[in-house]
Length: 299
Image: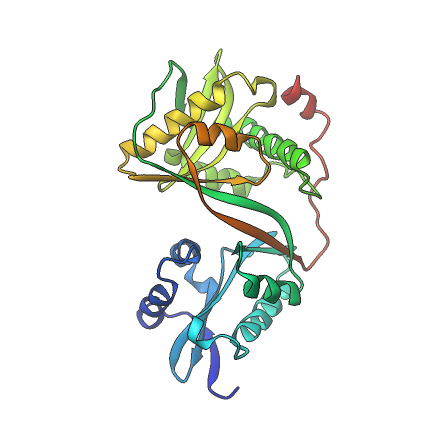
């Protein structure tokens, strides 16, 4: 295809075109995040000197979030396949990358077939939920911002909570990530958006605010089903509202019982996304949390 070129992203040339083609597509947030974090991980498809699609990565670590998007007018011309070839070459040659993940919207059969054809499979599905930015009643709980000394306990509360949830809803294989210094530095840098809830002076729950979105809200396993999750989520929602959020969003895995809690707090499902995975190397994660910490979290 002589008219097609895959080139590194140039914001002054490509940003307006990509923003226009994405419009209100949910991939827009992914593109914005990639553009902010590392624009050198974005490549564009140029057809007859017009930017008609893009490929982006959120970084080249063990798991790389990969996005491919082609302007609807230029689909079924092999542009998506060419971008996928570029992605495969980059990811397979990067020593750090073990797998690529991405998502497509439920009902988008064309994108699902494209992903299946290129070696991806659906690992799980999740709802995007929203509620209006109205304050919720708060209870008398103790919440403070994350501190660097909290890292190991916060990491393990989150990892074990999600490991248990994955096991419960049947997302297999389920894994555990051990703490690492790179993640610790990232947490410290994002300290103002991370919160911990304390029960009797001990960290009982962790949560993150990403813009106007809640993420990674996790309650220690031995303290679940006691109302702490509702109280903590209410605090986080109100913090977003205090920061100016008119709409609060979150993602919840399909089959996760927590969806009932979110609905009771006024969240409504907006869309269903299918998360897909493709492996390039053997997975080096641990298949379950280490015995020395797992019993402590489930006592």
